[in-house]
Length: 149
Image (cartoon, rainbow, N blue to C red; front, side, top):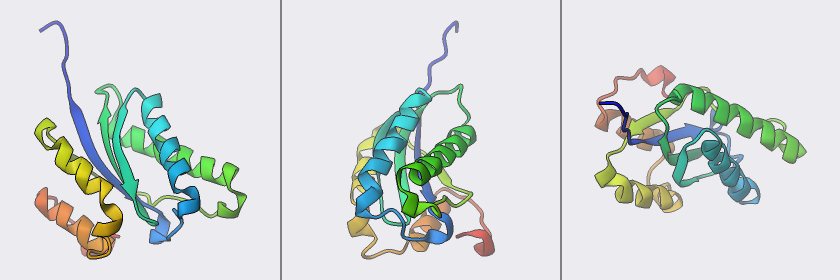
C-alpha cells in the first residue's frame, strides 16, 4: 500500500496535581479552549472536552506521527504555563504527572462524547478514583493502588 490510513481516537483523562480543585468556572472554558487549540496545533482534532474542578476528559483524534506521550507532555506543560501567565493567582497550578489514555472505536464516538459532556452530573455519583479504576479494569490494565491517584 503506498498510502497510510489511520483513525487514532483516544479518550484521555488527566488531573490536576494532587487532585486540587483548581479548574473553577472562572478558568474552565478558557482553559478548555487553550487545550483544544493545543491539540489543533499538533494536527489533531479535539472532538469533546469537559471535566470537573480536578480533572479533564478529552476525546481527540491524533496524527500517527505524534506520539501520544509527547502530545500529552507538551499539552500539559503548555497549559500550565498558560495558566501561570494568564492568571497570576494560579501560579501553583500544575497537572499530575501521569494520565489515562484509552482507544475508542469510530462506532463508539457518540457514546464517549455523551459521557464526557455529562461529567459534572456523573461525578455527583461517582468519585474520580472510582471512575478511573473502572476505566483501568474495563481496559484490562493492571495497576498498583499505591500509585493510582
